[in-house]
Amino acid sequence: MKGLMQPNPMNLVHVLEHAARFHGRREIVSSTVEGGIHRYTYCDALARTKKFANALRKLGVDVGDRVGTLAWNGYRHFEAWYAISGQGAITHTVNPRLFPDQVAYIINHAADKFLVLDTTFVSLVEGIQDQLRSVEGFIILADREHMPQTSLKNVHCYEDLIAGEPEEFAWPELDEETASSLCYTSGTTGNPKGVMYSHRSNILMALAVNGAEGFGLTTMDSVLMVVPQFHANSWGLVYSAPMSGAKLVLPGPNLDGKSTYDLITNEQVTFSAAVPTVWNIFIAYLEEIGGKLPTLREVVIGGSAVPRSMIKIFDEKYDVKVLQAWGMTETNPLGTLNRTVPEVMALDHEAQLDYATKQGRPLFGVDIRITNEAGTSLPHDGKTPGRLMVRGPWVIQSYYGLEESVLDADGWFDTSDIATIDELGFMQITDRAKDVIKSGGEWISSVDLENTAMGHESVAMAAVIGMAHPKWDERPLLILQLREGASVSKDEMLDYLGSRVAKWWLPDDVVEIDVIPLGGTGKINKLSLRETFKDHVLPTI
Ligand code: ADP
Image 1 (cartoon, rainbow, N blue to C red):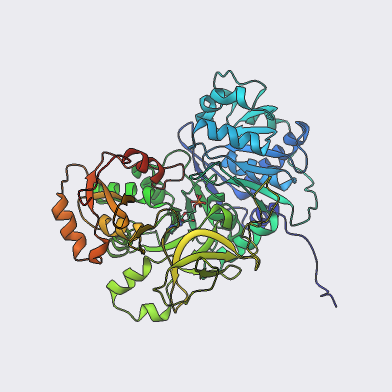
Image 2: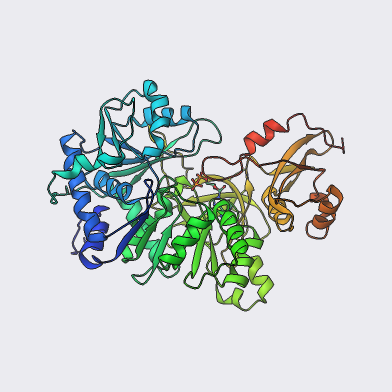
């Protein structure tokens, strides 16, 4: 027997319709590419979204077409986002920080029909224009006055395009499994692969994220969405903020410490999300000016491991709770979140900080387990590391263009992360499978070593890579980027680590580098470090 409730399919544009109808006065505030602040309401955003939907129809965009975006978080990008997927086309967010050849590869692979871009990225696209096979035209997110001179062919000005269009658009009724958005993995190994989200997967994730065990946003919140829309849908915030009627603050290209601080202060931001690199820069600025964060309640940090020192300073000095999140492009992206539980609250303060370095528990909908190489489940004892497997309605089934399923026989996706899960259900990433250091048949966690090294006051950033070793197979090399003006000798560093990690984990060598290279999503680029240090000889050989 079937239930007798309304079977209406979920469409992402309902999120914006809801925000406009019931939180219509709530603001979207954007720091713009042109300079200055733009502010309007969800109600205004919906009207302009419908105008753009009409304009796209006129350009020939149809259900199932891909429209690429190369843009910062801003109000026009937000409108384009909902207009594209609301009418059944697919918002393909392209990460502009990738190499130009990768950007071209991704656009061709997705066969984008149009590209929507900020003026910032015009020269990037000009440089690859000749390689693009499917793109029929370019829409620049600007008004007439700010349109750049460009060699791009078939260029449209966004404001001109929407100017004469009606503020009404009949959104089509779409099956909820219709593709809504496309995001490519950052391609640190091989070519980037496309993950095709559906209306259903996004809405289910946004609902879960909005629960009190998730981000717990309400209409009283002011959300600074630092994590880019091109970084796995800004971790779902682009949906969960309007869904809950929260005020949305979009930083545009301005991700430096001062801009972030000004937005937090001026817009009374209560909640924000970004990768550790952004918060590092922010905290350095905050400390320098002696700033305060009276309105900020929580920050979500994820994408790579969050150093304990960052959690500590936010908590003790600024009274801001850090919620660590783990996820990947393949998980839409939110998989786990670290919110505390009574058992952890009962511990002393330092132990609570230790616990906050774990990646957290899955939200309802996501299931996780760890397995050995043979695929057998491993115990949840907080000690045994295994391959992290994940499943759920917002987890990938197959990559775009590659039909075969990437799941195992029981429907689990292998994340290529190595993790432990403890008795309370908290997962902790100990490494990526390819980064773990295999020494004498045991595993050394590069992430743990990096985090510990970053606790030293002279260290701005630390990276650990495995170096071939004739006796042990691999041994760790610690690479340090020091804070400005700071210095630390190898022996001092090894002493510092010696009291904090197992003896056999101690790096065989410590080297300094001016800048540790980061990849397109702010993670340490270990591929490039391995290349740089491929001829380095460990003193222990
Ligand atoms: P995203 O674009 O969301 O960063 P990617 O697919 O590029 O996702 O990378 C996902 C990987 O990033 C994960 O498999 C994991 O290795 C790493 N990661 C994400 N969040 C964390 C975290 N909180 N701690 C440690 N590693 C993380």
